[in-house]
Length: 268
Image (cartoon, rainbow, N blue to C red; front, side):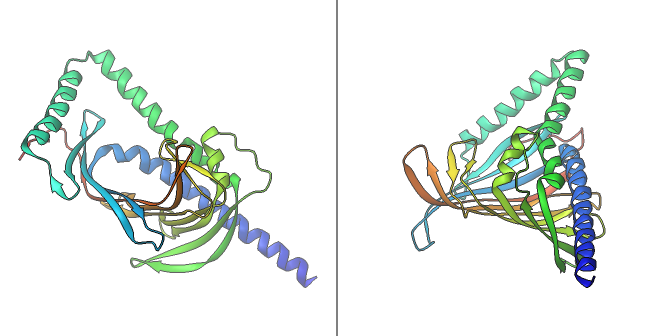
Protein backbone atom coordinates (compact mmCIF):
# COMPACT_ATOMS: atom_id res chain seq x y z
CA UNK A 1 0.00 0.00 0.00
CA UNK A 2 2.79 2.39 0.94
CA UNK A 3 4.62 1.61 -2.30
CA UNK A 4 1.43 2.27 -4.30
CA UNK A 5 1.03 5.66 -2.61
CA UNK A 6 4.65 6.43 -3.43
CA UNK A 7 4.04 5.65 -7.11
CA UNK A 8 0.96 7.87 -7.18
CA UNK A 9 2.84 10.74 -5.52
CA UNK A 10 5.75 10.32 -7.96
CA UNK A 11 3.35 10.39 -10.92
CA UNK A 12 1.65 13.57 -9.67
CA UNK A 13 5.04 15.20 -9.09
CA UNK A 14 6.04 14.36 -12.68
CA UNK A 15 2.79 15.88 -13.95
CA UNK A 16 3.51 19.06 -11.97
CA UNK A 17 6.98 19.21 -13.53
CA UNK A 18 5.48 18.71 -16.99
CA UNK A 19 2.99 21.55 -16.43
CA UNK A 20 5.79 23.87 -15.25
CA UNK A 21 7.78 23.06 -18.39
CA UNK A 22 4.71 23.52 -20.59
CA UNK A 23 4.13 27.01 -19.20
CA UNK A 24 7.81 27.85 -19.59
CA UNK A 25 7.74 26.80 -23.26
CA UNK A 26 4.75 29.07 -23.93
CA UNK A 27 6.59 31.99 -22.34
CA UNK A 28 9.64 31.23 -24.47
CA UNK A 29 7.44 31.48 -27.57
CA UNK A 30 6.21 34.92 -26.44
CA UNK A 31 9.76 36.09 -25.63
CA UNK A 32 10.96 35.08 -29.09
CA UNK A 33 8.29 37.17 -30.79
CA UNK A 34 8.86 40.21 -28.57
CA UNK A 35 12.64 40.08 -29.04
CA UNK A 36 12.06 41.82 -32.39
CA UNK A 37 11.35 45.02 -30.42
CA UNK A 38 14.94 45.13 -29.10
CA UNK A 39 18.43 45.82 -30.33
CA UNK A 40 21.39 44.13 -28.68
CA UNK A 41 25.11 43.40 -28.83
CA UNK A 42 26.55 39.90 -29.10
CA UNK A 43 30.07 38.56 -28.62
CA UNK A 44 30.74 35.30 -30.47
CA UNK A 45 33.76 33.00 -30.14
CA UNK A 46 34.74 29.82 -31.96
CA UNK A 47 37.60 27.85 -30.41
CA UNK A 48 39.55 24.75 -31.28
CA UNK A 49 41.04 22.94 -28.27
CA UNK A 50 44.09 20.77 -27.70
CA UNK A 51 43.75 17.30 -26.28
CA UNK A 52 44.21 18.68 -22.75
CA UNK A 53 41.37 21.18 -23.19
CA UNK A 54 43.53 24.26 -23.70
CA UNK A 55 42.69 26.72 -26.48
CA UNK A 56 44.57 25.94 -29.69
CA UNK A 57 43.02 28.70 -31.79
CA UNK A 58 40.22 31.22 -31.39
CA UNK A 59 38.23 33.50 -33.65
CA UNK A 60 35.93 36.15 -32.18
CA UNK A 61 33.40 38.56 -33.57
CA UNK A 62 31.24 41.23 -31.97
CA UNK A 63 28.12 42.54 -33.65
CA UNK A 64 25.14 44.73 -33.00
CA UNK A 65 21.67 43.71 -34.11
CA UNK A 66 19.56 46.68 -35.12
CA UNK A 67 15.91 46.81 -36.17
CA UNK A 68 14.88 48.50 -39.41
CA UNK A 69 11.10 48.72 -39.76
CA UNK A 70 10.51 45.50 -37.87
CA UNK A 71 13.36 43.65 -39.58
CA UNK A 72 16.58 42.71 -37.69
CA UNK A 73 19.94 43.46 -39.35
CA UNK A 74 23.40 42.64 -38.08
CA UNK A 75 26.29 45.14 -38.07
CA UNK A 76 29.78 43.79 -37.30
CA UNK A 77 31.67 45.92 -34.76
CA UNK A 78 34.86 43.94 -34.02
CA UNK A 79 36.81 40.96 -35.28
CA UNK A 80 39.28 39.11 -33.07
CA UNK A 81 39.18 41.86 -30.46
CA UNK A 82 39.94 44.70 -32.88
CA UNK A 83 37.50 47.36 -34.13
CA UNK A 84 36.78 47.34 -37.84
CA UNK A 85 38.89 49.54 -40.03
CA UNK A 86 37.30 52.70 -41.39
CA UNK A 87 36.75 50.98 -44.74
CA UNK A 88 35.19 47.89 -43.17
CA UNK A 89 32.93 50.01 -40.95
CA UNK A 90 31.83 51.99 -43.99
CA UNK A 91 30.88 48.75 -45.79
CA UNK A 92 28.78 47.70 -42.80
CA UNK A 93 27.01 51.07 -42.83
CA UNK A 94 26.45 50.87 -46.58
CA UNK A 95 24.75 47.50 -46.17
CA UNK A 96 22.38 48.99 -43.60
CA UNK A 97 21.77 52.06 -45.74
CA UNK A 98 20.92 49.83 -48.73
CA UNK A 99 18.54 47.75 -46.60
CA UNK A 100 16.86 50.90 -45.29
CA UNK A 101 16.52 52.37 -48.79
CA UNK A 102 14.88 49.15 -49.97
CA UNK A 103 12.42 49.24 -47.07
CA UNK A 104 11.56 52.90 -47.76
CA UNK A 105 10.72 52.08 -51.38
CA UNK A 106 8.07 49.54 -50.38
CA UNK A 107 4.42 50.13 -51.04
CA UNK A 108 2.01 49.79 -48.12
CA UNK A 109 0.92 46.38 -49.40
CA UNK A 110 4.51 45.15 -49.82
CA UNK A 111 5.30 46.24 -46.28
CA UNK A 112 2.22 44.48 -44.91
CA UNK A 113 3.16 41.23 -46.68
CA UNK A 114 6.80 41.44 -45.53
CA UNK A 115 5.88 41.98 -41.89
CA UNK A 116 3.30 39.19 -42.02
CA UNK A 117 5.83 36.80 -43.56
CA UNK A 118 8.43 37.79 -40.96
CA UNK A 119 5.95 37.11 -38.18
CA UNK A 120 5.09 33.73 -39.71
CA UNK A 121 8.78 32.80 -40.03
CA UNK A 122 9.59 33.76 -36.43
CA UNK A 123 6.73 31.61 -35.17
CA UNK A 124 7.87 28.71 -37.33
CA UNK A 125 11.49 28.91 -36.10
CA UNK A 126 10.50 28.07 -32.50
CA UNK A 127 7.33 26.08 -33.09
CA UNK A 128 9.11 22.73 -32.67
CA UNK A 129 9.87 23.58 -29.03
CA UNK A 130 6.16 23.20 -28.23
CA UNK A 131 6.76 19.44 -28.39
CA UNK A 132 9.09 19.52 -25.39
CA UNK A 133 6.37 18.79 -22.76
CA UNK A 134 5.34 15.61 -24.62
CA UNK A 135 8.73 14.57 -25.94
CA UNK A 136 10.45 14.33 -22.53
CA UNK A 137 9.98 12.54 -19.24
CA UNK A 138 10.47 15.03 -16.40
CA UNK A 139 11.70 14.68 -12.84
CA UNK A 140 11.63 17.37 -10.17
CA UNK A 141 15.21 17.45 -8.86
CA UNK A 142 14.94 20.25 -6.32
CA UNK A 143 14.91 23.99 -5.84
CA UNK A 144 17.61 26.67 -5.81
CA UNK A 145 18.14 30.43 -5.79
CA UNK A 146 19.77 31.93 -8.90
CA UNK A 147 20.58 35.66 -8.97
CA UNK A 148 18.27 36.16 -6.02
CA UNK A 149 15.31 34.40 -7.69
CA UNK A 150 13.92 31.01 -6.57
CA UNK A 151 13.88 28.38 -9.30
CA UNK A 152 12.81 24.78 -9.83
CA UNK A 153 15.39 22.31 -11.14
CA UNK A 154 13.79 19.79 -13.48
CA UNK A 155 15.51 16.84 -15.15
CA UNK A 156 14.49 15.87 -18.68
CA UNK A 157 15.09 12.67 -20.68
CA UNK A 158 13.53 11.80 -24.05
CA UNK A 159 10.56 9.44 -23.84
CA UNK A 160 11.43 6.02 -25.20
CA UNK A 161 9.60 5.33 -28.44
CA UNK A 162 8.28 8.87 -28.88
CA UNK A 163 7.89 9.93 -32.52
CA UNK A 164 8.34 13.70 -32.96
CA UNK A 165 5.63 15.38 -35.01
CA UNK A 166 7.80 18.32 -36.07
CA UNK A 167 10.90 17.64 -38.14
CA UNK A 168 13.11 20.00 -36.14
CA UNK A 169 12.06 18.27 -32.89
CA UNK A 170 13.84 15.06 -33.93
CA UNK A 171 17.17 16.48 -32.74
CA UNK A 172 15.72 16.84 -29.22
CA UNK A 173 15.50 13.04 -28.98
CA UNK A 174 19.32 13.07 -28.86
CA UNK A 175 19.57 15.54 -25.95
CA UNK A 176 18.94 15.16 -22.21
CA UNK A 177 19.61 17.53 -19.35
CA UNK A 178 18.26 19.87 -16.68
CA UNK A 179 16.18 23.04 -16.70
CA UNK A 180 16.25 25.83 -14.13
CA UNK A 181 12.83 27.53 -14.27
CA UNK A 182 11.91 30.73 -12.44
CA UNK A 183 9.19 29.97 -9.85
CA UNK A 184 7.49 33.36 -10.18
CA UNK A 185 7.46 33.89 -13.95
CA UNK A 186 7.94 30.33 -15.28
CA UNK A 187 10.85 31.48 -17.43
CA UNK A 188 13.95 29.55 -18.46
CA UNK A 189 16.86 30.73 -16.33
CA UNK A 190 19.39 28.07 -17.29
CA UNK A 191 19.66 24.90 -19.34
CA UNK A 192 22.39 22.29 -19.09
CA UNK A 193 22.26 19.41 -21.54
CA UNK A 194 24.31 16.65 -23.12
CA UNK A 195 24.03 14.91 -26.46
CA UNK A 196 23.36 11.17 -26.33
CA UNK A 197 23.89 10.55 -30.06
CA UNK A 198 25.53 12.27 -33.02
CA UNK A 199 23.86 15.61 -33.62
CA UNK A 200 24.09 17.88 -36.65
CA UNK A 201 25.25 21.37 -35.66
CA UNK A 202 25.82 24.81 -37.17
CA UNK A 203 23.69 24.40 -40.28
CA UNK A 204 25.01 20.86 -40.82
CA UNK A 205 28.60 21.99 -41.36
CA UNK A 206 29.63 20.01 -38.29
CA UNK A 207 28.32 17.01 -36.38
CA UNK A 208 28.62 16.85 -32.60
CA UNK A 209 29.64 13.52 -31.11
CA UNK A 210 27.75 12.00 -28.16
CA UNK A 211 28.76 13.60 -24.85
CA UNK A 212 28.85 17.19 -26.13
CA UNK A 213 27.82 19.77 -23.51
CA UNK A 214 25.24 22.49 -24.07
CA UNK A 215 24.61 25.45 -21.75
CA UNK A 216 22.05 28.21 -22.25
CA UNK A 217 21.22 31.10 -19.87
CA UNK A 218 18.68 33.91 -19.95
CA UNK A 219 18.20 37.17 -18.07
CA UNK A 220 15.25 39.39 -17.21
CA UNK A 221 14.98 42.54 -19.38
CA UNK A 222 12.99 45.67 -18.47
CA UNK A 223 10.79 43.67 -16.10
CA UNK A 224 8.79 42.45 -19.10
CA UNK A 225 10.51 39.49 -20.77
CA UNK A 226 13.52 37.15 -20.62
CA UNK A 227 16.15 37.10 -23.34
CA UNK A 228 19.38 35.17 -24.01
CA UNK A 229 22.42 36.00 -21.91
CA UNK A 230 24.92 33.22 -22.63
CA UNK A 231 25.25 30.00 -24.61
CA UNK A 232 28.06 27.47 -24.81
CA UNK A 233 28.46 24.37 -26.95
CA UNK A 234 31.52 22.20 -26.36
CA UNK A 235 32.58 18.75 -27.46
CA UNK A 236 34.08 16.75 -30.29
CA UNK A 237 32.83 17.65 -33.74
CA UNK A 238 33.37 16.17 -37.16
CA UNK A 239 33.80 18.65 -40.01
CA UNK A 240 32.74 17.19 -43.31
CA UNK A 241 33.50 13.47 -43.64
CA UNK A 242 36.98 13.33 -42.16
CA UNK A 243 38.30 16.01 -39.82
CA UNK A 244 37.54 15.66 -36.10
CA UNK A 245 38.15 18.56 -33.72
CA UNK A 246 37.62 19.40 -30.08
CA UNK A 247 35.67 22.65 -30.16
CA UNK A 248 33.74 25.31 -28.30
CA UNK A 249 31.27 27.86 -29.59
CA UNK A 250 30.22 30.58 -27.14
CA UNK A 251 27.96 33.64 -27.35
CA UNK A 252 27.32 36.42 -24.83
CA UNK A 253 24.37 38.77 -25.39
CA UNK A 254 24.27 42.20 -23.74
CA UNK A 255 23.14 45.81 -23.98
CA UNK A 256 19.51 45.08 -24.79
CA UNK A 257 17.67 48.27 -25.73
CA UNK A 258 14.05 48.76 -26.65
CA UNK A 259 13.97 49.95 -30.23
CA UNK A 260 12.50 53.35 -31.10
CA UNK A 261 11.43 54.22 -34.62
CA UNK A 262 13.31 57.52 -34.48
CA UNK A 263 16.64 55.83 -33.67
CA UNK A 264 19.39 56.74 -36.12
CA UNK A 265 22.29 54.48 -37.09
CA UNK A 266 25.61 56.25 -37.44
CA UNK A 267 29.26 55.29 -37.82
CA UNK A 268 31.57 56.70 -35.20
